[in-house]
Length: 219
Picture (tube, one colour):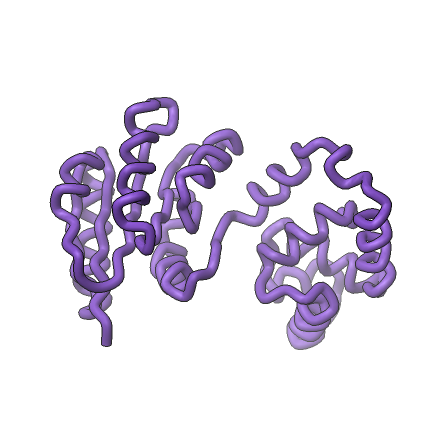
């Protein structure tokens, strides 16, 4: 098994220690180190194995942004996860420009382990609500081309009314069980609807489905 070097950058001592202890104990394949700044992390990064960087970076600080970009330029294969309590969509755009692979809110810390597994598979991960806000904030003029409009209409037409209803709940971050409760169906039926939506939209996960739905103006 290829070792995973996990680097945590967090100015909050308690958060840093908590995550370092959690990942060191939960998975022996991780070689976990924690830092309170990006500079020290860059100096400590080795050239072996897979690299995942979990960073709580102040994106209002241009110097910090440049350090993240420097880190990514030196280690282009490194997977960067932005981990923050800040839910401003402007910060998400900034983090994307730095080459990060995922955005996780600190209130969703339990999702970190799963997010690491995703980025190691070259997948992208972002909160569904933030993804929806990002694409909703884009100018509609970006999607007014005739071919794009026709493609969007095809997407709408391929979904049933029930699947559109499920897709809206899915985009709001609802689980299959919560979707089932909301529209009074069984959990298995909800799961089947979600699977059908993924197939029809040619997507692999809920984030991709949400993004495609927003771009097609389904929601």
